[in-house]
Image 1 (cartoon, rainbow, N blue to C red):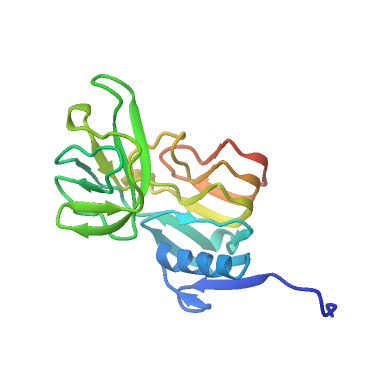
Image 2: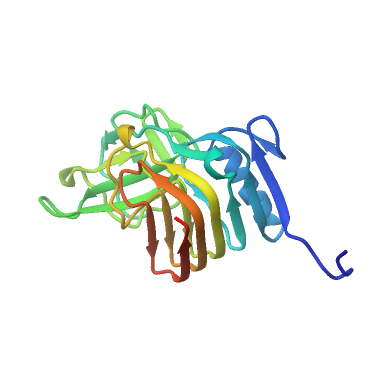
Length: 230
């Protein structure tokens, strides 16, 4: 046995018909990941099944995301897009869309516009806190301008697994399905089936990224990353 000062990692299971947390979408997975983080890190074990993703699974430092091989599939929900109904500026926390159908509280949203008329596109990944009519409240203040004259819009585009400024993360034995037939293309600088930014010591092992309408794995400014058997 272990010495009294020893420890084993916390393991929290998510499943559709079994497990510590029951569910079949990103909210159940995120609830488990947040629970593991609160107790100092460990393993999020995802039992067999197909899990519909309306937002990315946002990972924390010290977290292992472990599937059950080909039997565990995270599949992106179909994307929708709407033009903005009015300008959104720096430091605002709401965006106003022409049609809010398909946007949901807790879901992911990518706000986009051209940098100038005829210019390249800029993108900002956010999380939706509330949907009130055609008004979306997001989880942070905008740090870019999104103006109608620059073709501003919002779309339910996001990675399937996302980490930002987190370290010592492992993702293994899982299938990530981007549902390409029902999703728009995403620039790999802003998303990917796995998208990690400003992270150290990331290990990705035995992961299948399929049908993602963009990059399968996007590691942006990450040190000590390892990708094996993938």
